[in-house]
Image 1 (cartoon, rainbow, N blue to C red):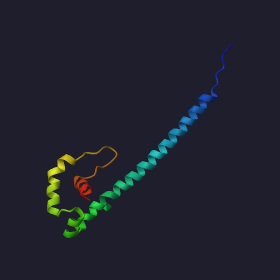
Image 2 (cartoon, rainbow, N blue to C red):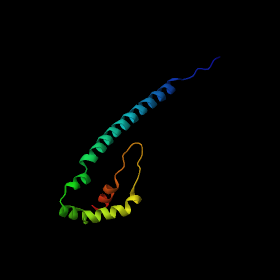
Image 3 (cartoon, rainbow, N blue to C red):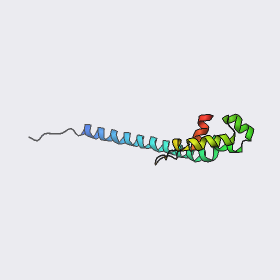
Length: 103
């Protein structure tokens, strides 16, 4: 006599796995869209970009260094804080990293 196999449990687990994969894919897509729109705006609307419009006195109050000293410190540590980034994200610039540290 031939044995009968219960395929309903296999079908249920397969359907559940497909649903989980769809939910994961939707969440991943939503996250990457948010990240990319933020990354596009950071270069043009980021706080560090706006500091280029500061007067010299405001720049000094903000970073506790004048522009010349800021650039001197940057030239000393630039090679130590540089990173190439990865495939999914543009890295923060070295001057911006220094500004975050000082701010």
